[in-house]
Image (cartoon, rainbow, N blue to C red; front, top):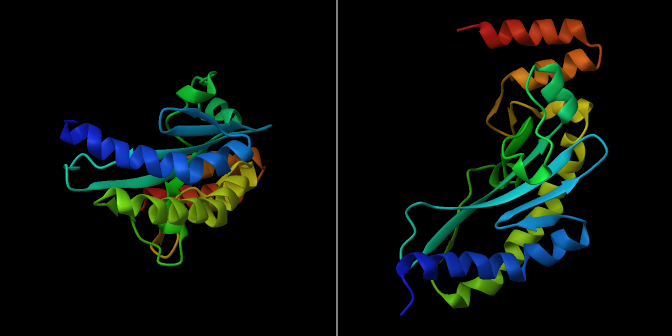
Length: 186
């Protein structure tokens, strides 16, 4: 008999293999575990499937994180550039997929039986195709990071350190200074 953790994990693996994985592979993403990444000219785009720590034998919950990593921002921000794309596990611009959907919430998909896998796989693939891919396309540029970093659709738009760096790299010093003042305000 499979352990609780293994069965919960298997549900999520089946969803990924059936829905998002073929789409992401067709778009040039490489896979490492539940982490997909694609290297572009100026950025690496990432999609990661995160399981809930509270999964049990009768249900599995997971969410999808999307982000970009731009070496130019890392350098300008004073960070050491992470050379290996699969090791870029933090981003300069990112969000949970649920916040990109029309409902704009911290969405965790739940699977309580193998019968849920097919429908959930279709939902996740569709959400990635319609919302995550366009977001990543935009967030893989300095202009996109300047616009999207610190932005949580429908909830908040706070300046973020990487947003400031992107603005400065774009030569938009006054906007960066204004955003920095907003970041410092209590």
